[in-house]
Image 1 (cartoon, rainbow, N blue to C red):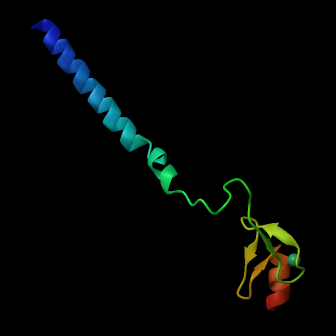
Image 2: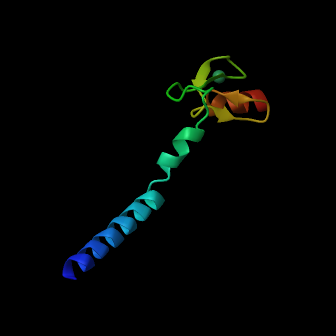
Image 3: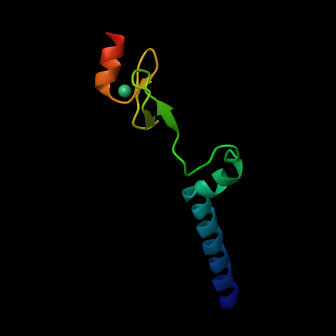
Length: 79
Ligand SMILES: [Zn+2]
């Protein structure tokens, strides 16, 4: 009888651990839905609307007429 209790406790613990892991790591469920068209490692480069210099999208300054390489060019173009 004792062995049955231990097995039940182990099964319950394993079930809790698995359900807890599933909730804690949503990344494993995101992977299959990832876009296959875009390259994941390469950063997108966009040209500055004023000097045409290409800068990473993350570093570009968004303006009303486009994106710029720096805050100075955004002000220069939009003033
Ligand atoms: Zn620029």
